[in-house]
Length: 149
Image 1 (tube, rainbow, N blue to C red):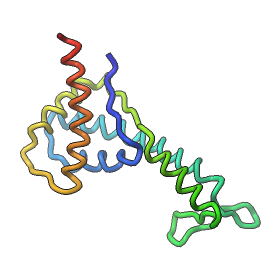
Image 2: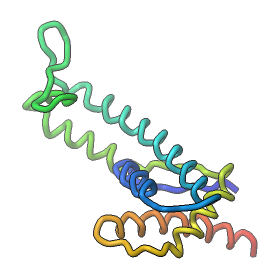
Image 3: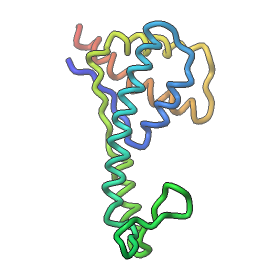
Image 4: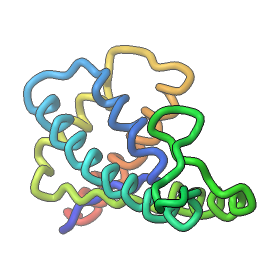
């Protein structure tokens, strides 16, 4: 049975960053490392999709080069296309990123078990990210229990 976690594209980096802050040992730590790699790969795809979606809206100079934005690394969007660009980005941000982890199931189960009883309290944003991650892990591993019955 294929095991997956599903996040919105815009949630990928915050989940990955959160995982990096946890103090884990042994198999749970290895599960975290595998999950961060999988999240990173999906995040790279997401960033590429964002870049491609913005391409038609980017202001170009006479030579066809992108016009740099106010901050380094940013580009300037054509003024009258700002709303279209924002809508395109919002669509991509809200798309689901499905992370398949079947081959790492044992390590992910160890990660799930370790963070289910994590000894530190979470607050604010970390609490919301923890809840999001746990919802996905619980769903993945509860389906496994249902399949065993």
